[in-house]
Figure 1 (cartoon, chains in turn orange, blue, purple, yellow):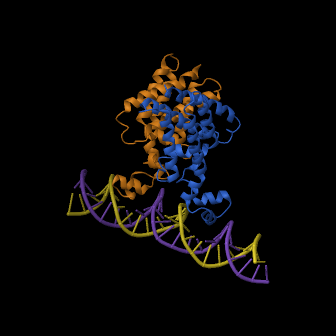
Figure 2 (cartoon, chains in turn green, orange, brown, purple):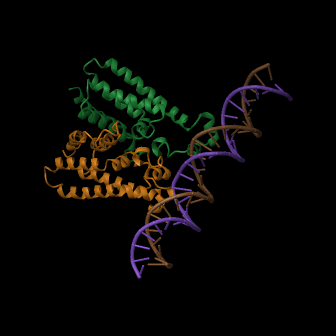
Figure 3 (cartoon, chains in turn orange, green, blue, cyan):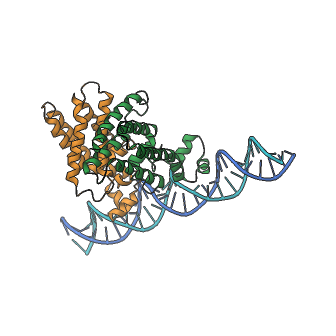
Length: 170
Length: 170
DNA sequence: GCAGGCGCTGACCGATCGGTCAGACTACCC
DNA sequence: GGGTAGTCTGACCGATCGGTCAGCGCCTGC
């Protein structure tokens, strides 16, 4: 619901109704709206962090870039709602700790691929790849019937993301 | 403000305060919050529509694709706030006519570049190009100091967008 | 000089926001 | 059977939401 209608556009009442409980019950299980939001986001952010740690290990080996691309696309697909929220609503929600942490992690992705000072062109390519992939995953028009051809989407994403980030090393 | 904090995240009171007027005065000039939002978005959407009409004319000539890319990136840069809103908040605001119209126009861009049934890969590439470009324009971290190197950003965007959409015709 | 319209405002409206709290209900342990 | 802990809820809170309205001052045309 946060991904679909935005954080501010989703009320606790709507969440409670969708869950079949009262608003009070929602606030019994979660300390606040922001707390609920953070708990919903935390697992995805944690996995992203874990992913990044494993990246720096493999960064030395040469052919790891193709593997990285596939892993990264899979991570995005697994956590596409969280990715959508962080990418699209990230700057809006910059005062929420978990979101800030996630945005910091995304910055780390950039750093790990750009030795020294990144050029504008490099930053643009990486930004287009990340944001574009995140957008395409969730905002692709038929929000329902996208699960069928998910393998096709995965393949296309790996292709285009790989194309966009590969020249970064040169 | 709508681009920065989202439509639902921006109140009429905040708008009035930023403008140095009272909330009543804002609602004197605009019939409602949604009316203000639509009026703010309308010029950009109209220009996008105009751009699309000129595209189909030039579609016959061969080397128009490079020109299209440059023109399109310029259009995005000129209307980057509106583009950011439509791309990032489009699905959230799907009941607002102007937004719906804009999303329809974006679909037309896709159609004009894909004869017959578009493949998933083509759709993905176009989506990544559009969404990625729109994101990178506005959400690039230092929201203030991005105006200096705007030519550099423009160049990089033309490059990457051109690369993403060019193979679509083949 | 005065009548009328325009820009603007504070007071106010009902609805909804996120959040608190006392109590009801159930289930389990002694 | 009598506490006790956990779950859930309706009533309620102050604040804020988008929006209405009567009326204010001011400028302009006659």
